Length: 362
Ligand SMILES: C[S@@+](CC[C@H](N)C(=O)[O-])C[C@H]1O[C@@H](n2cnc3c(N)ncnc32)[C@H](O)[C@@H]1O
Image 1: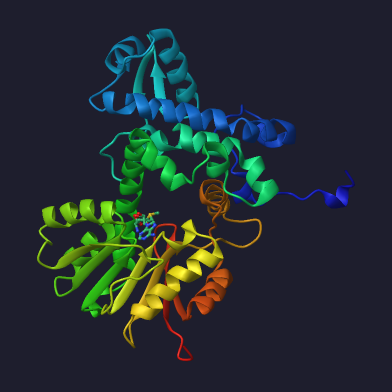
Image 2 (image 1 turned 45 degrees about the vertical axis):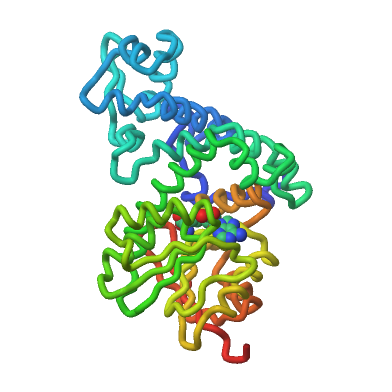
């Protein structure tokens, strides 16, 4: 290749020194590339460790891999090989006699760690997710989601048909949402609103956190009927039964009226522009004058930066034929949906709060 066509990757993009790859790999492009090519092995190894609950078994102190194998229901020799591989990349620490303990990274694989990644790691290796990524080539060739190509139905229907995978997905989303909700309420004063409607509010982690932080506010959670029913239980058990309703429905048809703020977290990224604009238009029709829209989403960063945002974007492509968006893309989408973007508030998580108001021309 002519030298002018070779570019040095930005440090963040290169993500050097973290996982598969030996000493000296940072000076050797071919070895570094091999490390990146083999990164799928680490994802699957973490998925297996999380599915077996290995880290949870190490919470009370070091264990030999034989004892762990018995506790987790695994083959002792094979579990030892998994553990030593993960110890080699800093997830566990291996001491004499095949004894393993948790490192700081490994502690995040326990179920009750703050910011636990256990359920997320369990989810990425479920057949629906793993096989969809196996068909990324189809998505890139056609622009279609790979989940539907792989399973014959869209990702939502697939999970409805596979309740065991749905349970893992729900647990992963709940864990993610809990951590993100905290970051969102720290970054924005929701106390200025009397009635907050959470569109596609899931099981209610965000609305629960907002209402607990804002005792003067009332809430309406809106989601598909089955999800709204389980959100109702979450909200009641947080003592919010009197201050919050859970309403089931379809946001492509209509959403509840009368709110001062319409919050929508991690919803627009599930849809392509045409569908996302339809959801926005439903909100626009329901919103009283002066109400605010707060879309809480990941903003894709500038060229050569933000690998995590850009790989999340590919995940949305594979899963739903959908996308993460840049600030400019959100601005254009909001305009089509009948809104003006007025502010973007960053949080300490990867999510930003995109504040919009109904366009006066509508
Ligand atoms: C990625 S989840 C986000 C959930 C929640 N906002 C959060 O951040 O954890 C998207 C949500 O949209 C809901 N949803 C999908 N299609 C819907 C529809 N047609 N009408 C209402 N809600 C829908 C899903 O049930 C799900 O709870």
